[in-house]
Image (cartoon, rainbow, N blue to C red; front, side, top):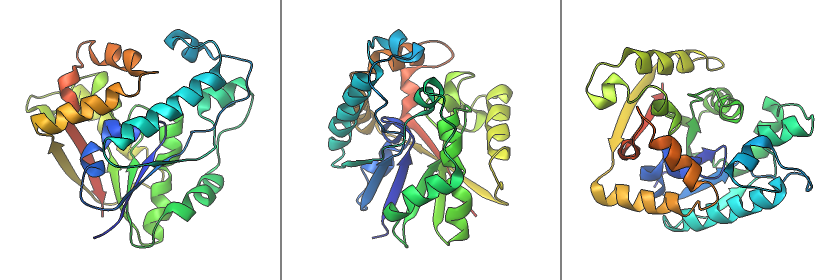
Length: 241
């Protein structure tokens, strides 16, 4: 069967956005990209707000959570040592270049693989950097599927019209703007919406709860209107033409 590769900017992104891929019968590799451990001895404002006293120790916990969560789907993540943007900002480091990211990812991309790439909805710098991988992946002949970054694609304005069945122009416009902002936007995108069964959703939520280090903050965000934890049953991706 065609192998799949899921590019997960951070621990939890693959589980949140592409659970139906992780539990598919295909061979699936999960590459968690910004999984580097920062220099010990400081804590960022975001980590401190979530309960950390040292960001290095906090990140080690998050990586252990990632392994435990993905094990529920029978997957094991490949953790790269790039540090995420909040740590780079604290240490006055520049953003990761497209060339550096490509060189780090290429060893994990099977020539025949279908590659799931975040679409960058929500504007998180790390997600947007990985979304830029679409250009070289398509140029080298890979099938690429842009996934809707969960919960970013619905947490601000609720579900888009074509998921929730109710007109929601603000959500629609946000998603359209994010896709238009991709580096070298593709000429054609074919949208697909997957609705998990109640059993699949329950299993996904069990996997999310294994991210014990960050789960409380995530569910607090999901429980604030217009968002709702039940929206996790919808997973969205666009096949790049």
